[in-house]
Image (tube, rainbow, N blue to C red; front, side, top):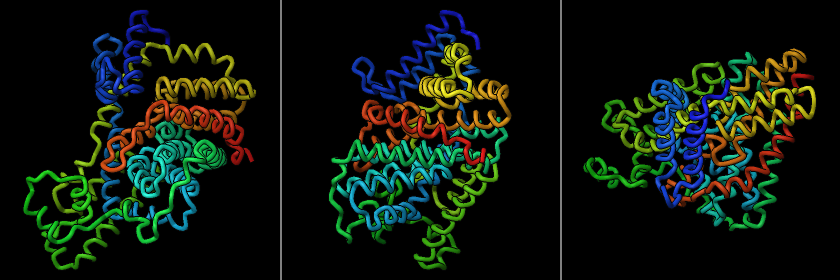
Length: 476
């Protein structure tokens, strides 16, 4: 894309700068309006400055991603009520040898789960849980939040369903699910290990927390607490009362309305077992649908609707747990990023560097990786993939057919790991940050700088370690 007019480039860059400043410093003294309002302000400026038309602004909002994010929050709420995270907590805490061992388990479990559940999904449903695990053991929250966010990004690189940019790459490149998985798996496993070791090295002394008593091991993180009959009766008789966070968790744990005739004939354990089993079954079905290539957003929405219908009661409590401010933030970000792309600056960077980015030389791979890292953090990873995908593949086609496949896999690996560079590098980072800040218990503010201090070196090292491993199984 050619550079736009000088006025559009200047004004678009200024609007994008507003987004960056308020995202990095949400409480900046001269405009303490926060990240969500800052994203909306930047989007409005893009339209006001005529960098992007109103119609294009609406078209730039990625509804499938918003739908996927919304639905996973709903599904996560029902899985929480079904006690899934209590089981996961027991798995992580089983024979735990302290904070360092727990950190390693969080890294491994998150990375592997993200390949199947997507990085955003894992971060949505695991952030508060990880905060509880750390608080229970008198450990600082920051290392575990960093482990969650960075491992989710690294793990999501392994499959086409791990993150949105991989979906775009798999669709455009026509690489099969298995071919994509085998092509990136060695790099993902090595990157996960390296990232874990770097976390341990940086926070070794901070991970000396106490181990909780065996009888209290999962008390703070046990999900799906059942309210007493008195509490349930009080909640049912007082519908107008504003529910606290604990009350809402209890209502979610109750699961199914006892007013339904079929359930009236069942005992309480049977009712709870039914919904728990149903939640696990439809979630497994959702994963199978992902692997079969069905639309991810509508698959997740259908799963959420199925859970709501079978729950057979007012869904207000469940829907009230959705972070709507996060959805609004992403809406503003989509418009802002689209406007910035229309200035032509990201395309201009590629046009200058393309001759030096041939993947048949180490220097070319290095330059290409740096370009992807830069653009992924300036214009977001999905727009970067859309911008560079065809160009990189066309350049690789002049080398060999195998180079084309490797170039797509390289783009997937680097654009995904680039998300760890800064807090704004990926949606998963922002989800962890906002979920942790808004957590009803043990809230923690993961700042831009506390993330970048670890994220920047981790991104560079993990990217470098993974690049030589891209496609080695396919090549063999």
